[in-house]
Image (tube, rainbow, N blue to C red):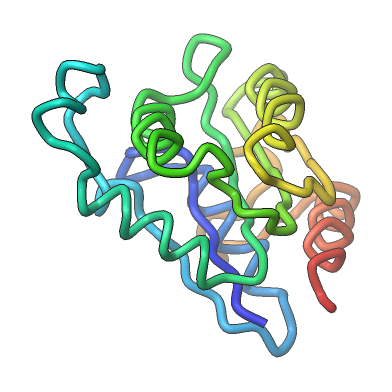
Length: 175
């Protein structure tokens, strides 16, 4: 099984990247690739830019990664209650190439934040809209208070209940 994972963030110190990397490291017998959205940075989407640029190669490359995978795991950063610009922009470009961006793949959605909200707003938005874009959402997990619940030195989710939720979620991808 091939799994693509990424944090929906462009931060080089992303706590969501730490979470998604940890989560997919527990998939047995899976070929896992953790993507960095910085490798797919594109100009801000607009119809005017699309007329000039057409279908950018980086958007096509991102879609190919999803196409070649059996499943996708995403951990969403929440910026002012919504998606990060890095994710939303890449998604917008990709959706112009194929509106079913997630190509009927099984998807697990994660989110974390430094505070008690656990990025639940963006997680709710993602889980509500992703089926329209070809995602079969298998599970979603929010981790509040990241720095209290994730041991950054050992790179492990230290809170037993949250760890169990994440492990249960990613186990739904194993076929």
